[in-house]
Image 1: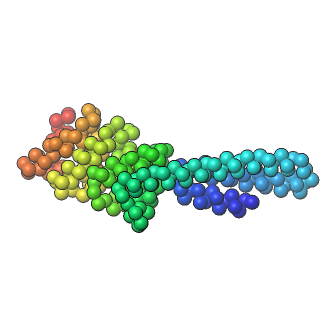
Image 2 (image 1 turned 90 degrees about the vertical axis):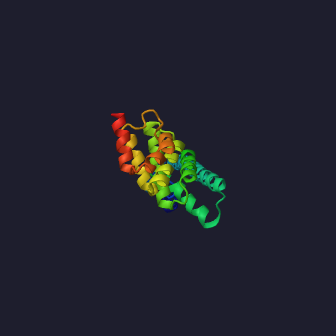
Image 3 (image 1 turned 90 degrees about the horizontal axis):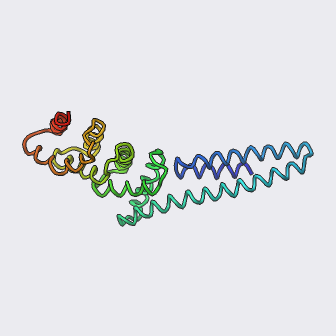
Length: 219
């Protein structure tokens, strides 16, 4: 019945943002059920039977998409948790990170989200779930828009944190702004930060002064 379909759709929407098609399928099935009721009331039993047949096909397709979506999410989550050896509450938290990043719509690939979470978490240790979600989202965007190497970018962020005493988000913001300003035009900004930021820190430069120096050199 339409109540059951609505519950299925509600549960599926909780899996990820990319599953809006399932919600649309549920609504369409509900509309068709209303159509069946009208036809039966009007005595058009043959037309009602044809409509019911169509609803059956939609429900099967709907169920297959829902099952596939949950399977993909579970697979991506299990891969990340297995990689880091997480269990219990830690595994549940990481699963929420994978799901929440996917919900933002930054990519339609759960595999890509899983790989990005692994890369970010590998390079930036001990991030809280919220920071891991935000930085992973930014890292995927940089890779998609500017063709940045994610692993090198995260190594660069780590170097800024280590050499200038920055928190992860502040370091990431420096990298994002620098990339937007053209500093990663050769896809080597992250690598350069890893190799040279320590030298400038030892020479007494602040992170802001260091990036201004890089910008001056670019210009």
